[in-house]
Amino acid sequence: MASKKSEKISASSSSNIPHWHDPESSEFSVNEGEGAYVYDENGTEYLDFISSLYCTNAGHSNQKITDACNEQLEKIAYVSPSKSNDTRTALADKLTTVAPDSLSDVVFSVSGSEANELAVQFARKSKDASKVLTRWRSYHGSTYGAGSLTGEPGTRNAVESHAAATGAVKFLPPVAHNSPFDADSPAELAEKAADHVEYVIRNEGPESIAALLIEPVAGSSGGYPAPPGYFERLREICDKYDILLIADEVISGFGRCGEMFAMQTEGVEPDMITFAKGVTSGYIPLAGVIMNSEVGESVRDGSNIGQTFAGQPVACAAGLAAVEEYEDHLIDNVRQLAPVLEDGLHSLAADHDVITDVRGRGFLWTVVVENPETGEPIVDTVLEDDEDNPIDEVVEVAKENGLLLSTGRPAYQIMVCPPFCIDESDITEAIEVLDTAFEKVFK
Image 1: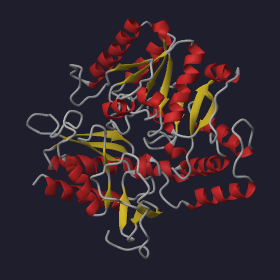
Image 2: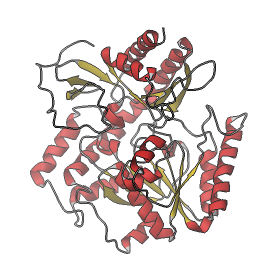
Image 3: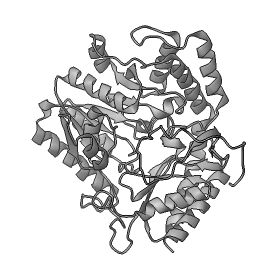
Image 4: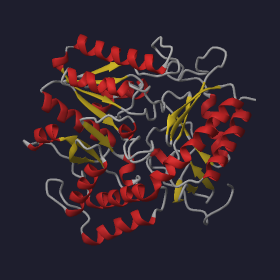
């Protein structure tokens, strides 16, 4: 992976302050990309096994998506979101055909945070209730509204350090590893975790709750799927208490878990799906909410809110092309290679006792790194954020050897989320680089 793709490209201006800025980290400029690879300012090649930010599902430089954007630019680049546009309408119609059958209406947004805020606004209006349930160890965004929904403390505490949004109530996640529930089997875990959700609902007062917002497979907070039967129970509980079930598919959607939407791997239909990231493969910002007719009718009654770039036509053109690429061959590649990736990660865990869990689905995986003797994080980044974290070092060594990964939230996890255009040799290479990195850091 030491090859050069192009002549040296100048680094980005130092006047730019990156998001998630760490003043102690070295600047890393990504200036080109092709397929599953990106190239820095020196032309050095990296295998992108984080899909940049869980976004570039179709890989970099996908010609069909690029061509669709260019064709739309030749027609019209911008149309107010208060008006109709043929490309915008076509994508909305397409999304309702690939989403669960009961979802019939679409409202576009710009980012995943804004999509989750829109869904919450729609739910509160539809149910005339204020509270929204989300789980601890979740991530729903970092704006004030979405930050209050997020259960990951680093983000939520940063957002709420000076002001906090109201109406968010937390419940415990159905994690199998280091579970807060004393369960002896996945079925018992599903039952106890769902009973806990019902307990929270009853104690909050069902009439005060508009919605339950949940990631079908956790994203950056740890890639954990729910045990079988959990979502069926959540659907029953939400129906029992007249609460809307919202699936946050900002990361898990558009093929990452082996179906167009991760909820389709659960066999449960939510009342709303929020989406972003993969809808355009990250080529242009686009997000939104797909909802059932009940919620849709409430929205159609009229709204005084909007976002300037919601449903931007060039982004919608990118979305149409990306969804076609997913349907045509890319999701099939996820289904074919997901067992290979899973086996490789479990093999890695078998060789390194500091890897105490591997979990995920499709192309959304997490490697958990802990003290194997205690089962506790080597560095708990929630409580010890000033300590050196060896998991950060693993990610850095992998990068030095041409593989891009990231830590999760909390940062005793490594996220593994490749683009869908990889092949088996890319997986082999990534596992070998990770093996070398663990050997070096935990020798």
